[in-house]
Length: 129
Image (tube, rainbow, N blue to C red; front, side, top):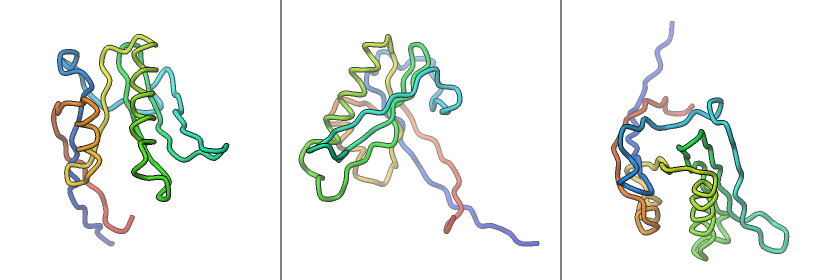
């Protein structure tokens, strides 16, 4: 028998509109989403930044924001996050949120884009897995 050591990973839940954040329980599992959209930023046909958007009726989760290293610092992540929010709102989302690592820098970007803290949760991860 072997045992796996689990380490806590604290994450911050951020919401695009604090007023719309009442009585909601994130996150939205992909299998429960009624709509999945990919938001892409391209330069000369190459995808340089992206985000997924999961949506169920009035709730939407921005997820998996990423930018290729050589294109960072040029506003592409900002553009895809703002495009995801706009797409969610256009489809009727009243509550748009994302989840960010509590101890990592992207949470500061999300705050600059108008996201407010909603809460925290801790998930356990196995180091090395």
